[in-house]
Amino acid sequence: ILQNDKMMLHLLNLPAQLFANPPAGKANAHYKALAREDAVAIAILLVCPIRVKNLARIHLEQNLQRPGDGRAFLVVTEDDAKNWRPIEFELPKDLIRMIDQHLATRSPMMCPHGTQWLFPRRNGAGPVDPNQLSSRIRKRIGKETGLTVNAHLFRHLAVMNWLDANPGGYEVARRL
Image (cartoon, rainbow, N blue to C red; front, side, top):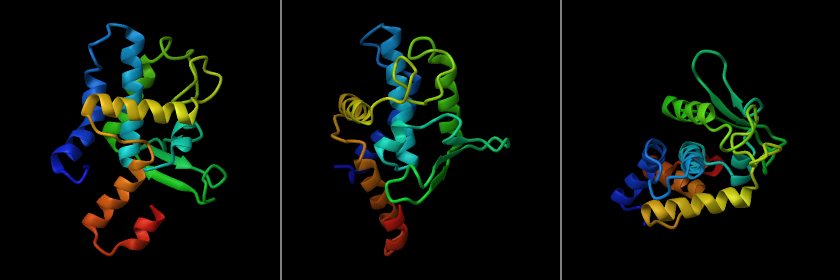
């Protein structure tokens, strides 16, 4: 179903739309902040097809590295990667802005001020459970688009898009 251009475009535009206009169904500020947090998670998966365990455990100082020139990188060390190979993605500027805006407005609704996890438990003591984050992503995408997309599918989507754009690029696809 994601090979349909209209549905793919809907998924690709979802994070920006959801972040700018959280669902109005509930006036609860916490619900809107949670929708924005989900938008950030989906946006990251669209450009960095990492495992949900690594997504849930993004630490603001250890995994989001900013060299000081306006760029930011998502870095997963070999100790945290399932295949023992480090992962590094440069984040697009629009995603950096989304993350920064989310971090500037999430406290105290989502977690205590100064929490170092991008997707924290609500008490700020650690990262959210990966299964909980995965479930939220699946439910949010389903509710907003009607698509059945889980966090793991983003990895397959990235490979499919790569191979569509680069037929025969199997080695890069394998590493991705």
